[in-house]
Amino acid sequence: MSRFPSLPSPPQLSDALKQFGRGIWPLMTFHDEVLRGQSDWSVADRELMAAYVSAVNACGFCHGAHRQIAEIQGIDPALFDDVIADPESAALAPDLAAVLTYIGKLTREPARITDADAAAVFAAGVSEQGLFDAITICALFNFMNRIVEGVGVTGTASALEATRARHEEVRDSAEPYQAFARSLGFSAE
Image 1: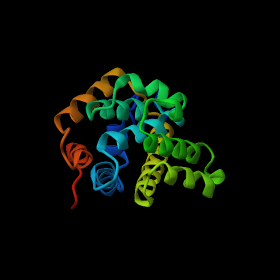
Image 2: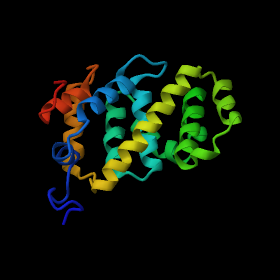
Image 3: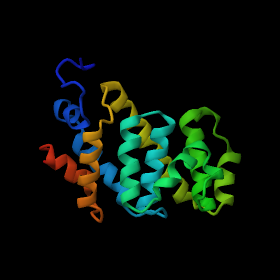
């Protein structure tokens, strides 16, 4: 049985978004802005951040989906286990390792983030805008992880395959999340 009796068991994210659609278009537009808009970080880096935050939160669906998207965008699949275990020890550029460490702490212990934590990120060569972009991704995926886990969405093999196929088709799109919303019947109007 589904956590929500009106949803199929197991529910997919698309089921929940269609059933409870308030705010979905602006939410998907925000996803596109944060994950595909102008940033110091590549699309691959930002999808890695999304997958990492989701792994820290043990959100299997979001971690699995964004891991696949990060791989499509060029992240080495062999890197994920090392990143999840300890970003600073993983084979990453120092700036990316530093920002992943920061957003990991922000996810686990938000009230314990300090000026010294931010200074370490800046010392690794990250700009203020770059850190803010990473913080925004962290916030977005803490939000999405709670929706997914609250509704009971699981990362089934078929759902993850569908995500991979959809994102392979829109690899270079600036608006893949709005395209997903359109496929569910949502629009700007």
